[in-house]
Image (cartoon, rainbow, N blue to C red; front, side):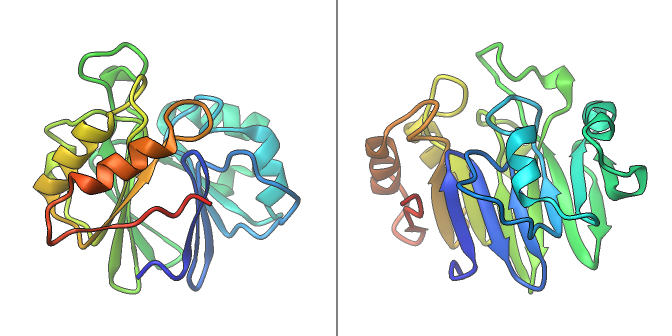
Length: 210
């Protein structure tokens, strides 16, 4: 189930199915200009990087962003018809791909306020549901997520730490769990290793960061 997915850096994810999909592109190493769809969880520099978006976008690339980011993306040169605004806890469809948004926010920190309406995504591709959590703590919303593969932040400071991430994953019970949000801005590879050690036996933990 992981053969078509790459964790490029930090929380930057690439999925290649019928479409080439990026989530929160960051520190892209060269110009690929191959993105059919870009999903953005929120507008912090390590998740919404205009420099990195330029390296992957094409003329007809669709970008999906939280509603408050619409004007920012428009100023960045995207055509209005290629921008999809989303709000939390809704279901959408784009290019025959179904996805839903999950409210992503901090419980005991000030970095990602609930009122900003930032999101994670559950993206369905060929019958597999990928949950990309975004920057979040454990919340009532993400404890209800149903998915096959969960990509969750483990670095702490701005998001869940590895213990909290494992607690969430053990509750929502995906088939596979992948740690993200470490090794660059915050968090170490040890956080990813320790996260996997805490997973329930029926959940496969995978480190994808090179």
